[in-house]
Length: 83
Image (cartoon, rainbow, N blue to C red):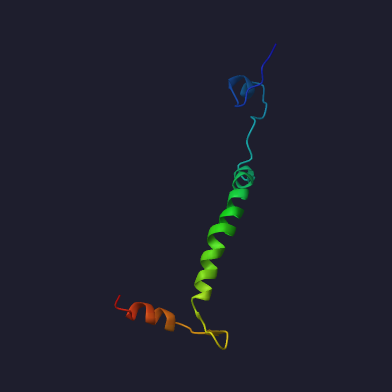
């Protein structure tokens, strides 16, 4: 009864057998498959709302006339406010 070895031992070298090797150039996607659902939820719940908040911070909502592009004037007013 013989057992196969995962690494080449002296008996394998003596019998001129090729040692078993692991393909180190092949990508392993198991970690990404595990992280995928979290990454999607994180993107939808955290990252996209932050990007949207930054986007709408460049606009000014008016009672008459709707929303107009304000540029950096909202930030100027924020940092100039003494309170």
